[in-house]
Length: 166
Image 1 (tube, rainbow, N blue to C red):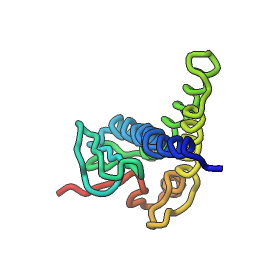
Image 2 (cartoon, rainbow, N blue to C red):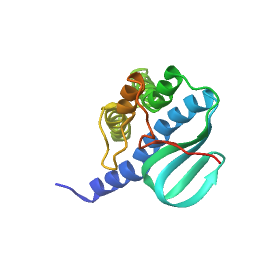
Image 3 (cartoon, rainbow, N blue to C red):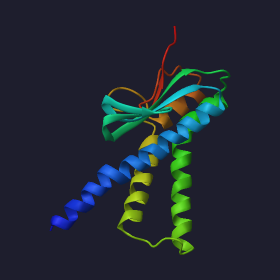
């Protein structure tokens, strides 16, 4: 049965843990984009903009979606572009390994919170790397990587938006 305690677990999972996993994913894209000389804005959520802290922008529905907007890039190669698209999954993968290490070493205890964190992290990596088009027509990070390898043009993926500057 789904009881009152389960509702609190649900709220924590979707309003705290999942946004944290999304921030880690976006931070991975951000890290590799900055390494490539991009000007980047990280976006957490969707909808109306609430506030910004440096390059991090929070939107009204902070718990749903996230991404990066790139306004310029100094040097572009296949390898750098692939790293930008892989960056989110790399950071999620590292956070999974770190969490398992902390549990294994007894630094933290396995709990419902760690389970939810690991679950959402694996979920995020899986759907980011699955080579498919999302409902809005944008490719996943995995499909974008395949397009790069095949020398095909990519406008954007769901979480990596390339903005034209004038």
